[in-house]
Length: 144
Image (cartoon, rainbow, N blue to C red):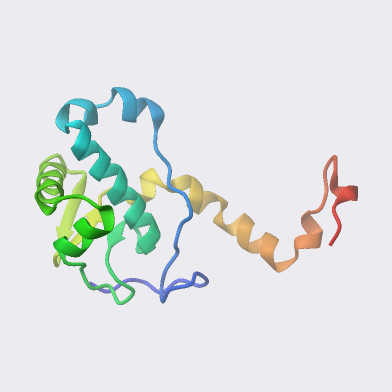
């Protein structure tokens, strides 16, 4: 699988995240409550975090876009591989993930994580000229 190159980040073509977004109502009251048991929901949350860390638009893969072996992912998440395989199978069946060239991909990643992308231009612009953004009620107190 070929991933588009991105500027910035600390991995080739990546946009690593330090946070991911969870929708409270969907998480507490949505279909995931009855489609997955508690341990599988934990795996789902871990897969979302792992996809964010990989920085490949929802894909869980290495820097070069190669899939991680399932036993490696299970080890990273500190869970039995059987639980990982079961959670992946259920998530695939429900359309939460896709398996492209043996790479686990969170479907609708951009829709789930759109706030990060929306704010990205502001963060990049702020990094170019931080003094320009020292305004507001306490801006005069900020020392650079």
